[in-house]
Length: 129
Image (cartoon, rainbow, N blue to C red; front, side, top):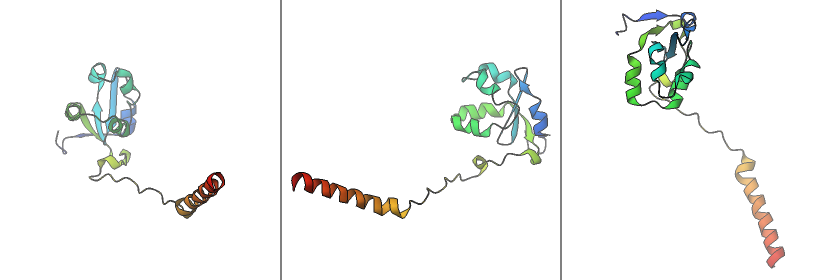
């Protein structure tokens, strides 16, 4: 399905398809009709029914789907989500960067180990000194 011929759906339209009889899902701002796939899903129908009718990118990516699953996914695409309803998702970017770890405060970095060392020194001298 080329970019020009993809049907555009609003999130409100997708939300009306959240049953086993009509199950639509949005992953990476693409709309999929997964109704026929519900019974075939290796994780069970219930897993998918928990996410139908809206955005499911994060849950899809958290599972770690195989390349085969991603290829199969393409066969169920029926369109794209309207630009006003697009999900801002970092998974779409070329580089997904982890946030830097928080800076360790001075007291934890230096003072706490020094105090622990002094306590051990005193205890050692009391026991063996």
